[in-house]
Amino acid sequence: LKDIQYINSYYYNKLEWARFDSNLGKFVGYTKFGVKNAERWNNDPSFIAGRKAERERYCQHNIGID
Image (cartoon, rainbow, N blue to C red; front, side, top):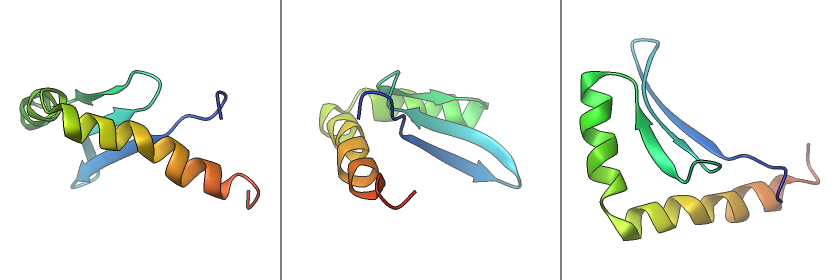
């Protein structure tokens, strides 16, 4: 599980505006709208904890499939 990276990207009109990266442990915004939302999400400890847990929940479950 240490070698696995969980990324959750948000797109609108083929443009990525925000992304959660499990290696960073936080959201990163790529547009004005994305930066605003990333700051809001990063300041919510329960939301960040849920995203961090996704790597174990989603990735570990699917390791054997891929």
